[in-house]
Length: 252
Image 1 (cartoon, rainbow, N blue to C red):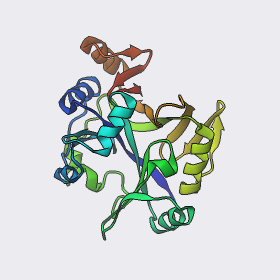
Image 2: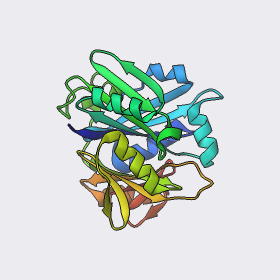
Image 3: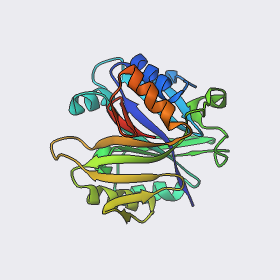
Image 4: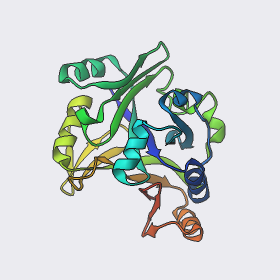
C-alpha cells in the first residue's frame, strides 16, 4: 500500500494576490476553480506543480473554517495536507477504530475523500483520498479539474518534496499521523518525519498558543535561481533558498 502527497492547500485573504505571486515566482498556472467549494463559503484555485498541486482557498463569507484559521494565525498560511492512497478502505477502518472524526467524507465510485478533524489529528487538516486511475501521477485528479495537465508548467519547479508542520507537541502529532497512515515515524536530524511514498512530512516545534499549521513547503527546483530572482524583483521575502508566499516558506 502507498500514500502519496498529492496536494497542499493554503488559505489567503486575497486570492488574486497570492496567485499572482505563485505565478511570478514559480511560473505556476491555475488549472481549475472548483465551484463546489462555494458550499463551504469559499473560492479557490488549484495549480499543478509537476504532478502534484497547490490549492489556495479564500473565504467569501463569514463563519468559515478557513476564515477562523486566518484569524487564529493572524494572516495567511497553510491549511491542508491532502494525500492519495491506493487503498482507501483499510485507512477508513483504522480512522474509525482510532475514534477520529471526519469533517468531510464521500465514497463515490471514482473518487473517495476523507477529511479528518484537525483537533483529532493535530498538525493541520489531513485529508486522505482515492482516485480511480490515479495510480498514474499524470492521470485524473478530481480536485484539479478534468484537464489539469494543460496548465502544467515545469520550467521552474516540478514537484513537492516535503511539508513542514508546526505543532506545540510535534512528537505527539507525528505519532498520531503514524497511527492513521500506518507509516512508521523516522527521526532525521532529531526531527520526527513521516515518509510518504513521494514526499516527507516534518513535524517541528511551534508556540503553544498558536494553532498547529503548515509553515513550509519544499519544491523540487528546475531553475531555483530564476525563482529567487523573480521573488526578489517582486519584493517578496527571500531568505537563502526560501521565498515566503501566503505566510508559508517555499524552499527551492
